[in-house]
Image (cartoon, rainbow, N blue to C red; front, side, top):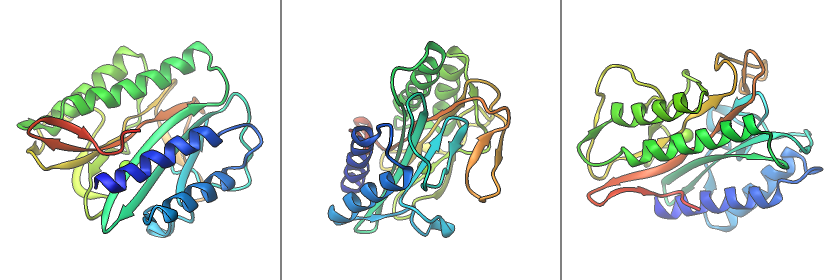
Length: 236
Ligand code: MG
């Protein structure tokens, strides 16, 4: 999983380099897929429930699951890239939101808050903690940053499957949830919006957008809970 996570981390670093006005989201997808395959891994998203690409690229009011295509990247866009790779049967999954240019203050707050919510969730994933501890840590940062939490999509267990049974909500459920023992691997992935985080899925069957078209951000890491604390497997 470290190896798979390394590939995913490298892909996101590559996307940050390539994300410039004029490039299309399909070109980004091709660059990502080539990198994953050259690293000896496979893109886990491609063909997943029929998803046609190796990464998700979600722009502005798109929250997650945007399908790469002919859309051209422009200055002033909020661009979330989600990537997954399988190496020797083991999965890595991570996402980051980028801004093309210099973000206005409210968008900078959204992006920073989402990243910090992820980091707070990771810090809470220590042996003996429960899913609710992670969820609460994410929620507290989101509320502090005055961002709304997208609720229908949650983090997940990960290992030899991209999505394993364990669910990791980005908000308190009022139940402790599963205990996180050493050796448990999860993907934590807060999705936040500047306006209302009510979402709907477009007619392409994939792209999730905020109903009020407010901009959204998405950060994700695959982590392992260990005796020495949480280890980020998709760290840049
Ligand atoms: Mg995920």
